Image (tube, rainbow, N blue to C red; front, side):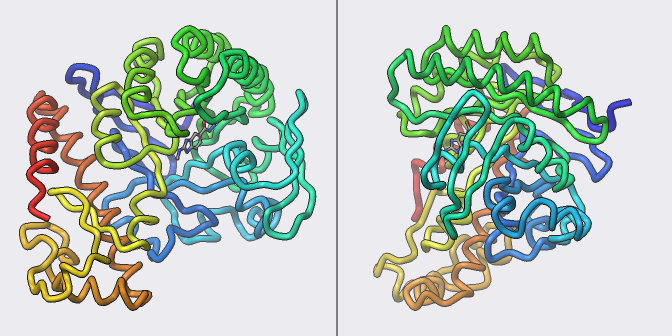
Length: 372
Ligand SMILES: CNc1nc2cc(C(=O)NN)ccc2[nH]1
C-alpha cells in the first residue's frame, strides 16, 4: 500500500491546489522547496526553515554522495536524522550537478563517470546507483537519473538526450523496486521542442511514475520559452500526479508556473540572493548593497507578517551587507524564504477561492509599483 499519496483538492484554470501525504508529514501544493544542498539550508536552522512555512526541503545527491557519502549518512540514521529535519525531503538524482559541477565527465549508455570537483576522486553515477544513493539517504521523493542539456541546443542533441533519459527512466523504475514509503518521479526532457517534450511525457507515462518533473528548463532559455514549454506539456501529464518544475525560480517564474499547472518548485535563488544582499518583498526585490539605503531608517516592510521585515532599518541591513557580517546572510535568507512561502501560501488560498487570476494580477501590480 503506497504510503505517499497526492490528492488534488481544487483547480482554477490550469492552477491546482493539492496535498502530498507522506509518513513524515504533508506537503501543501503549490509548494516551494528550499534547497538544503549539502544537508543544510545555508545560514538557516532547520526550525527556522519550518517557521517560514516550508513543508519539505531539497537535498542534492551529487554533494551528499561526495561529502559525507551516502553510506555514511545511512549509517548515521539517514538524512532526516543527520540534519535534524523530520519532515519530508526530496532529493535530486545528481545528474544535473554532475553536468554543471563535476570534472572530466564521461557519459555512456551505462551512466556517467566523473571526478569530484572537491578532490578529484573518481565516481560513477548510473540510474541504479542514483536510486540506491537516494534510498540510502532515506529521501521521501526521489528522482530518476536523466541527462539535462543546456539551451540553445541542436534538435538532434535534444532528441538524443531525451531518448537516453527515457531508457534511464525505465532502469530507474526497475531499480526503485516499487518501494511503498517514498515516491519516484520521472523527468520530462526534450529541450524547447514541443514534439520531443510530448514524446518524453508519453514515454514516461508508459513506464509509470508517482510524479512527473519537468526538467531541462531554466538552463539559459528566455522566460517566455519556459512558459511556452510548460503551457504545452502540463496538459499532457496525468492530472492526478504531482508536477515538479526543477530549479525554478524567481517569484515571477513561480507565479507563471503555478498559472500553467505546476505543483512543486525548488530554487537556490532566495537563499543565494539573500547572501548577496538582495531582499525579496511584496513590492519586488531590493538590493541592499546600494548606497541609497545608507541613511534609510525605514524598515524593509512595516506591513509584512514577518518580524524580520519590521525590526531593523534598511540602513542597518545595508550595513550588515556592506560589512559582510554573517547576520546579513542569516536575516536576508530568512526574509527571502519567508517571502517565497508567503507567495505560495497566498496562491494556494487564491486557487481554493477561485480567484487565481485576480491574485496574479494584484501580485504583478505590486511588483510593478515597486515602492523600493
Ligand atoms: C537553475 N536551473 C535549473 N534547471 C534545472 C534542471 C534540472 C533537471 O533537468 N534535472 N534533471 C535540475 C536542476 C535544475 N536547475
